[in-house]
Amino acid sequence: MKTLLVLNIPPALEDDMVDYLLEMEEVSGFTSFVVQGHGEGEQLTVTEQVSGRRKRVQFEIIIDEEIAARVIAGLSTRVGKDIAYWQLPVSGIGHT
Image: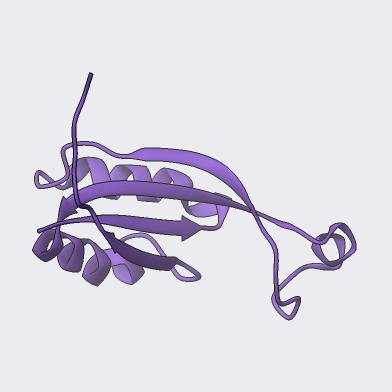
């Protein structure tokens, strides 16, 4: 079954994440974009606490569940720490 794997990372890890995903033959493509994180302030800098947001980069990949598990398994060693991820089932895929 296909799954949408979402990876939410610090901007400093963006180049390493792109390299990691491009090196994986099983990953045929992905989307990335800048997002703003809002929530618990314990890991925020003073500037981030004042603004109430934290800049992050988000990646979205539609892949088989087994491949998603392999991507996740290599994140901490190949890309770094402070990476949030989640998976959502994909019920349909298409192009027009």
